Amino acid sequence: SFFEKERDRLTAEISSGFEELLSSSNNLNRKLEEVLGMTREYETIAALWQSFHELMRGHSDDGDVSAETEQQPHGLPGTGGH
Image (cartoon, rainbow, N blue to C red; front, side, top):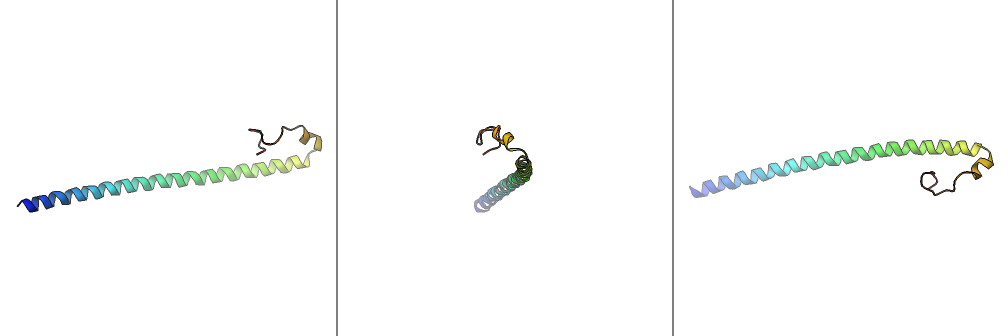
């Protein structure tokens, strides 16, 4: 009958919509996992640079004072003095 055909068509359409929603949700989940993985990598790199900065800062504190006055002023891009 017409009712049964229409019901089957609508059921198939709804089922297809749910499959598309599930696929999109899985894709979003993968992208979020990629972003979280990238932020973890940046944290690792930032920690490495921080330890390098602290090491170099400690090394320059041990040097003579005249070498420190010859350095570029702090705050210039590329000097590390933020």
